[in-house]
Length: 300
Length: 300
Image 1: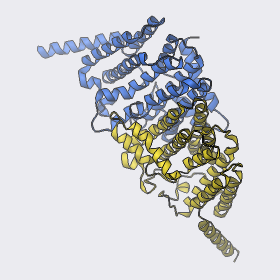
Image 2 (image 1 turned 60 degrees about the vertical axis):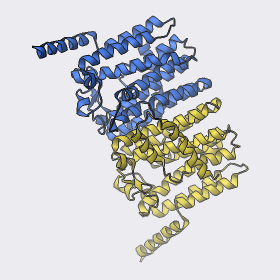
Image 3 (image 1 turned 45 degrees about the vertical axis):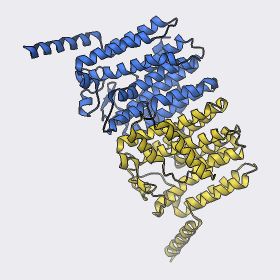
Image 4 (image 1 turned 180 degrees about the horizontal axis):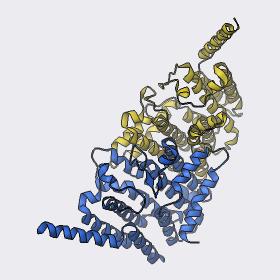
């Protein structure tokens, strides 16, 4: 089975458990809408790839860790899309959860997905008690205060923001959780895997900023939102060309950071594929051509 | 130290950990506002009382379990107070979190408190790996789908609701978590303690419904909300006198359910005190007198 097929199958498991006769049906439907169909599932892919690189001696645990991280990511998208934040109408080309089910169920679906993430990890942890606490703490670190994705989102409500701190928390934190959880679920030291998560997470956010300015988003999200909401943005800070150069640096660092292991080449290939998906080489070249033309025009 | 003083001190600990220099200050302030000053802290009291009844051989674990349950309760209040649900202006006599900090931070503070609850449990669980998974699963059961407090709240968004199912989930579930976690954190079987949580939780919800109708709430919450929001209510279903009788039955069952243990009398005393706090005997008597007068008037 391909890794993506394995992830989709694994993502469905907690829903079959939650779908008891006693569950409020619309809540469950809203939760499913938030999770299926999925996006690139890059965080769980990353988690599983690192677990394999570390021997993956407890595949049910690495799978649960991967699912829990993706559930947390989906929960954050539901809440970030709500009217008090992005007020987004669409996500992955479909109506956002609050557009489809209303605000109350969007709020609750996000909450229930957070709980489901921990539940998934705890259930797999019953057979691996010695690894459970560290995995949990990693998931909490990537999501809560002071430095997780919720804290990252909360920086948008502060009068002064440090761009790097904001991006590291808003996106990077859960990527670090993903790479570290891959190692931890296989009983390995997570420390050598932090940098990969860090670089990828920041690159992901930079690519998001660039696409938001370019106005050509293929992920089914509205564009021009950063300026509209006055959000910190690398593209605004460094200019479009500077942001592209920074993105390339981050991706090169991510590739270089992969520790020596039997599947190093495969992991580096995954990173390069993700780089191309996030910001295709052709788009980077186009931006550079446009910027060069602008500079020529300014000189003339 | 009294149990209440111990609880307040314990509730402050996760905040000192979260309050790193890198944390967004307004998020932390909103989280604190949601938790301090506290209400009756009945769930953590219950958890600790059961832990003591079971020998409490790992006091740092029972304390963490108690704190995690109260954090989860506080998170649910923040989200339930928001405009898309109760749209409440005050809670415990102070502005609600969204009134004080705005909707975005209220949404995120609730999310971050949920994560903090799991983090608190995981941190204490590092030294008690064999008990951690069961405690986590109990916390998830009491909060998520299909039967936890989030699911309970979600029943308000369904076209048809079973009153008992709604109340068991909306309030009862976290009381069951509290009594069971007390036992589990002391390495005891939680099964004999379920009924106590069940009865108390339902009684709590019934008392809430009665106070909402009586319009004399001392907890700093607005009244008349159930009818205004079209919510299921025992008082609407059974009438005021029927609801009072039902409350008394539930409290008697709660007292009777306390398993044989050295501190049985003390635990029963706690339940009786809580009964009096929830719905004072004098208020019950007053309701019965009023209802009797109404009946006499109707006959005459």
